[in-house]
Figure: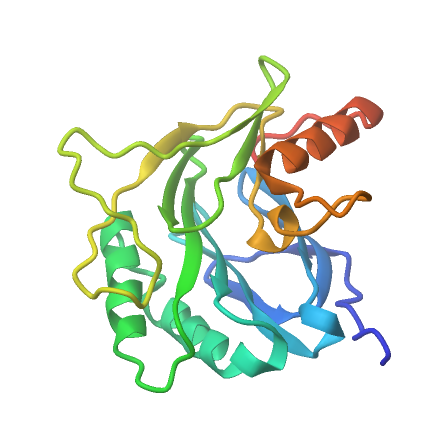
Length: 235
């Protein structure tokens, strides 16, 4: 089977009120206000589309960038219909002002889809360029990896709840009443954020052992040792 053709445009500058998203094979640089991103997606076994969703939008005069990485349970074309339903919900609710309400609406409406296949994990992020601040909500998704330009270290982000401690942050599609809370991350020049699906942590190394979080962290650290990263306003 031939490998699906990737998006050939290597750099994409988001414009105000623009949405860029999909569930197909893509390798692309995406730039928006105050940050640069690299998006790579490959559906299961070279299927044309799959359950992993990438979504970026720029709004409010270029001040707010919304970023979503979601993973619908299942693989390839089998769950493509469900992933498209989630993409439609992202387009519908992406302009919701408050982060927690946005995630709650996505979960509530995704739960109501009768023909969906299972649940979906997701990372939902809002980047405020005028404050250099990133709001992160983790809905049952693998923990993001964060590189601090000031200390030169990669570490997994445990997203703590707020003072009230009411957040549950379950995957989408399990319970309409799930409560979501977000984590606030200050972004400095040279910082990097790695969002990924469990396709990485559940793959095997050369000795047929699951990579897991520790194996992924080791690989990322090795890459860092071999590469010199440019200074960025954000990640």
